[in-house]
Length: 139
Image (cartoon, rainbow, N blue to C red; front, side, top):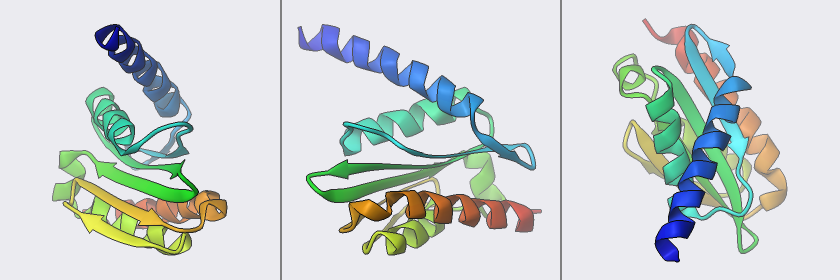
């Protein structure tokens, strides 16, 4: 039963990731996906990020969800973007400030938390702006 549920969850993540990419803003050939994911935990956010990076050549991601009244953020960028100076850690750090938190991680994958779930939309706006700025400055 667990295996069957995991299979359906993966299929759902794939469909949702495809929809996120279809609606993504594109800047200099890179898709920017800054979205809220409902009813997810940190592992599910990681699965979404992995799926988005599998489906797109150049993608910059920030995903947010509410967990027990707090905020979980996960940022991810394609490896090629890291070489251009676009870093997930920079994005998640700025987005976390908007929700009253902090965090960090590797240049290609970073996580953060925050206290104020009412500010998730603001964190998503901040993240998109961080990515836009980094892409504008990239070589």
